[in-house]
Picture 1: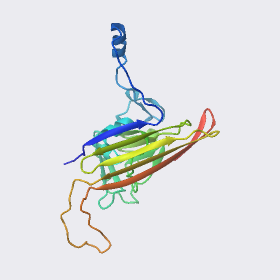
Picture 2: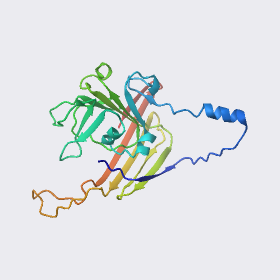
Picture 3: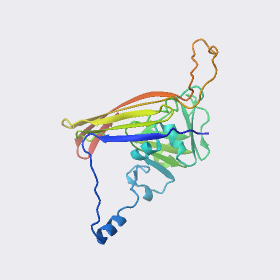
Length: 261
């Protein structure tokens, strides 16, 4: 049984605070607003090029940055709660190794020498092993979950599918944001990002996130540790995480750029 903490979120933009004021200005304007109030277009790169999610002929579930915040997703394993036919499990005894299964195809063992059957890509770079595959979500642009074999465009180890993670790039303009959310079980998450002004052809961005919660499973065992070097935690599902990210972009020409993060 899953237990999701109740969360309240607050956002503050570092550059602008816009207040939208609506008023009745006649039937033609209302009709125009009705036509433009459709679903937000989601751009994905599942086919190695930017395209609308609706025009991409792949079984894909995409999460934008705002959607991830609204769902309370703070690490990649929680994406499975909202993507159909996807399960993501952490290896027993560690919080850094994960096994992904899509449509029943994946890996149940997260040993270092075993290749996964679902590929994970971060900004187009393949993560070859599941060790260290669990990471906190910090300033991401979107996450795409592709179901079914993806060997044509993504290569090996994508028999079950692929997870494509895209981070936000530096803009070269001064700006930033601050976000915070609180909830029950002592849940608190806060963080932000800062875009620095470009210096010549170089731009940089700094992001930070911290999250802590008391958890919702209490360990009633009060005896001695099983091993002398181990400790027994009272709250088995407690979290106390911090994550940092520094992104750099070099744009020597208008049609060429290099990213490092």
